[in-house]
Image (tube, rainbow, N blue to C red; front, side, top):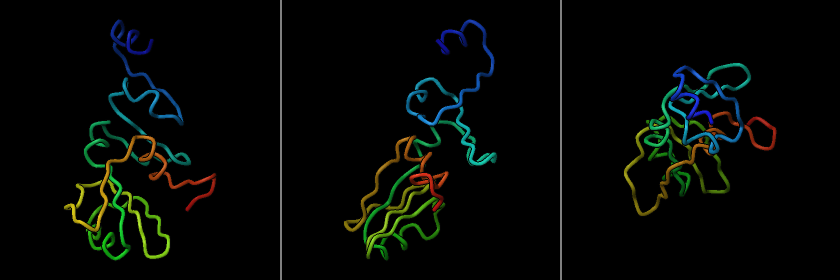
Length: 118
């Protein structure tokens, strides 16, 4: 309905949702707000090109992401996962690098897990 309405009457339409995937096919720009502050404003294509998760041994992940824009990190024992919004590091045998879904990007960017801030 939104797409059809927009094509008939072009204008800016603002939609608020916590379930981003349901609107992802219709958006042109994405704005993520957290506690009243703009945390992100760019295109969906930017997220698809630059939002990644890098996992492996903590020392390897830290070395690979040292000069990158790390938006969040989880560590358990000697293992780490860094969530980045940047050019992904070069793949190595010791790292797993995968794109983040839009929903994962949102969750990692605002830094909330189970209602608590990291």
